[in-house]
Image 1 (cartoon, helix red, strand yellow):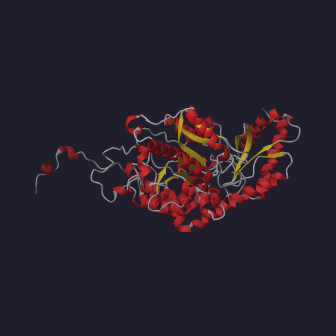
Image 2 (image 1 turned 180 degrees about the vertical axis):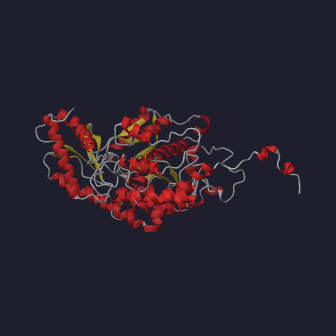
Image 3 (image 1 turned 45 degrees about the vertical axis):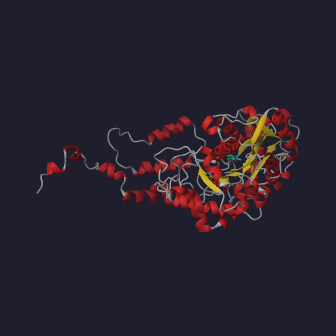
Length: 509
Ligand SMILES: *Cc1c(COP(=O)(O)O)cnc(C)c1O
C-alpha cells in the first residue's frame, strides 16, 4: 500500500465532509414533504372565492410578525421547523393583494394560471438562468418556440425577426429605445457623439407609460427632448395632429429618432392607431416602437387582434406576459422586426467570460449580448408550458372574457346617474368617477382619491386610481375571469356608500 500521506497532501486532507445540519437543508425527502405541505395550503388559498381585496398591514406590525418568525440561532444552522415554514407561507399569502379573489380589480398583474406557478417552482429548484444556452437549454429553446408562435400574430418575416426576454416591460422599453438610438446614431455607443443633424429626441403620447420617459432620461435624452403627442378624448394619439407636432420639433432643432405608440395605455387601456403612426414614422425614417406591455396579448384573440392593426409595420414591440398572459412576474418579451437590431442595443460589448472566442452553433442561441441582464430568470417557462399544455385558446378565451366583462361593466355604469363614465373600454380597463349631482368641481379630484383609499382600507375590493385629464379617477382592471356583474354592482354600492359618507363628513379626512 502506498503511503497515504503521499497521496493526500495536508491541504487536501482538510477537505472535510459537510456538517449534517448543512446536508439536512438540502435533504430531498424533506423537500418533498415541504412542497406537499405548501401545495396543500395554496390549494385552500385558491379554493377561497370570497370577495376580498387587500389586508393592508401596518408596516411596523408586519415587520414584527415577520421578525417573530426568524430563528434566534446565530452560530449554527438551525434545525428545520415545519411550523415556521407554515407560518411564513401563511403570512405571505395573507398579506398579498388577493389576486385570485373577485375582489381584485386593481392592477395589471394577474392571478396566475396555477400550472404556471408549478413550472416556476421547477425553475426555482433546477436553477437554469436563461441568457446562455449552456445554462438554460430548454428555456432558450422555449423562448425560440414562443417567439415563433407569437410572431404568427405579429406577422413579421419568420426568418428575420428576433425576440429577447427581459425582466419587465420597463426594461424592454429601455432596451428598445437603446436599439433605436444606436441604429440612428451608429457612432454613439463607441464615442458618445450622436453626430446627427439635430438633437436626438423621441416622440411619445401624452399617455405614455412613465417607463418610456424614464428610459429617455437614462439615455441622456432629457425631458426637454421628449416630444409629447396630443391624445383624443379616448386617450389615443390624435394622428392628424402628429405631423405638425413633429415639424415643430424639427424647427426647434430636435431630431426624432423614435416614436413610441402604446398598445393599451396604462390609464385607460387605449390603443394608439399603429397603422397610421407607422406611415408617419416610415416617412420620417423614424423607428416605431410599440409599447404593448399591457395590450399586445390581445393579438392572440381572433376577435380583438384588430386593435393592433398595423403592428407588422412596427420596428419593435414590448409584450408583458405577466399581465394578460397570466404567468408569474416578470415575464416580458421584446420583439424586433429585424434581428440585426437586437444586439445593437448594447453595442455588442460583452465580457470574455461569457462571449465565446470560438463561437459554435450553441453560442448563436445565447441572448446575453441582447439583454441588459446577465443572469436572468427562465421566465418563458411558465408561459411556454401553459401554451404547450393548454394551447392558445386558454389565453384567447380568458382575454375575451375580461374585455367582455369591462364592456358589461361599462353598460352597468351608464345606468348609474351618480357615476361619471370617462370612456368606452377598449380592453379590460375601465375608469370612472363617483360624482353625484351638485358636487363642486374642485372637490371631485380629492373625493376619488379618498374613496380609493377608503375602499382599499375596508379590504373587500382592491381598485386603483389614475389621473384622467388632470382629475383623479377610479380605475378598475379586470384580470379575474371569476368576476361577474354582481361583483361589479357590489363594488359600485361600496363606492357610493363610501362617497356619501365622505361627503357627509362621516369618515376621517
Ligand atoms: C405595465 C406597463 C409597463 C411597465 O411594464 P412592467 O412590466 O411593469 O415593467 C409599460 N408600459 C405599459 C403600457 C404598461 O401597461
